[in-house]
Amino acid sequence: MKEGIHPDYREVVFQDMSNDFKFITRSTIQTKETINFEGKDYPLVKLEVTAESHPFYTGKHKIVDTAGRVEKFRQKFGTRGSKTQAAG
Image (cartoon, rainbow, N blue to C red):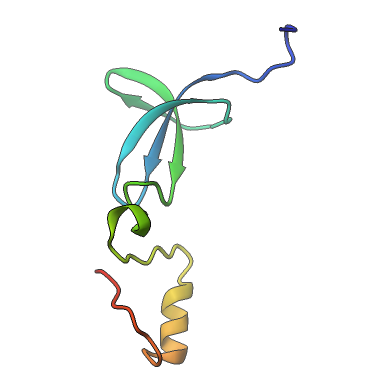
């Protein structure tokens, strides 16, 4: 391989912000934050949804809303036409 043209491929910690689940994998993603995980410092990538919190994999309906859009929608339309019950 040519020197100096490939991104830095290293171990990175990905953290699910909804349930604090963390896992290590290798990635070229650039981060500004680091975390001490299992006694070693790693670059940190924060995620809103992973397989540990996604409804398809967990079987639980959960609404992830970081900007208040769901609450604004519910205030405007209420529960009219809703067929699912959100997990709390």
